[in-house]
Length: 153
Image (cartoon, rainbow, N blue to C red; front, side, top):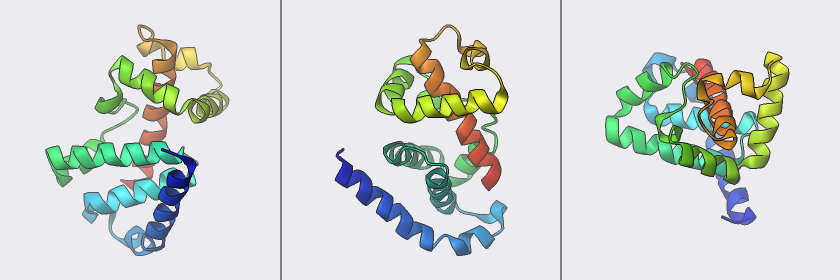
């Protein structure tokens, strides 16, 4: 995807954000999966996620909703608790994710090291059998997605 499509995608997200204000006032337990996805998208933008990664994550979560339903999705999101979303657990998928979004992931790894005062290797000891690129991608995804889930649920 080129930069024009990425800018268009972000612009679309900003337009959605204008309609989100009313959703934020809604009781969180009563939110639909669609509203939850819209809020996730806005929160990812606020947290400066890579715009193309936002698009990929939203598409992934839409597939999850299509497969398991809205209630299962919101339940899954509420129980994420620092685990890697299943769609990114396979080592090669995680490596590909790292390679596609390396700049952003490396920046987030550095932030996490500063926040936790622990090197990324220590934070990913449970993943030590994986390639370092996969470990970094999974570390960032599990940590940042859990933070977003806790804000929404």
